[in-house]
Image 1 (cartoon, rainbow, N blue to C red):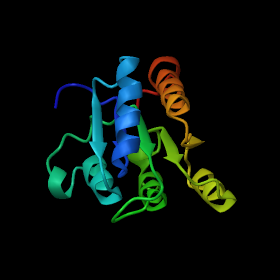
Image 2: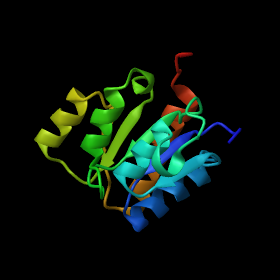
Image 3: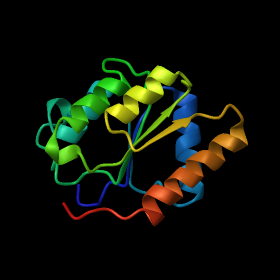
Length: 146
């Protein structure tokens, strides 16, 4: 893949996936989006293992949108593996979840998440939140050259 990946969306809920992609597309932020539906696929993709063996891992996303409640590996387990690897420490991870549990919020920040966002229930609010996140992480935020 020669095109830089801008967004890696790791989300198993089809409705949430559709809303996220729609919001990013409306703002022209989803041209280079990869969507995966479970935590293990996320790890495999990022590290170039399993089904993604041989993928050029120098091509990493600008931001990862990560759900917490995922099949195979939870979002917390994905985050733990990412932050344990020196090569993955600089990739911004935005946890996008329905959980408002203080233990989840504390744990993801302890593990190195860059942001924690609760998915809005209202359709328009969901589009607004995803759009604002996309604009910030893809247009405003600066990244180190590592």
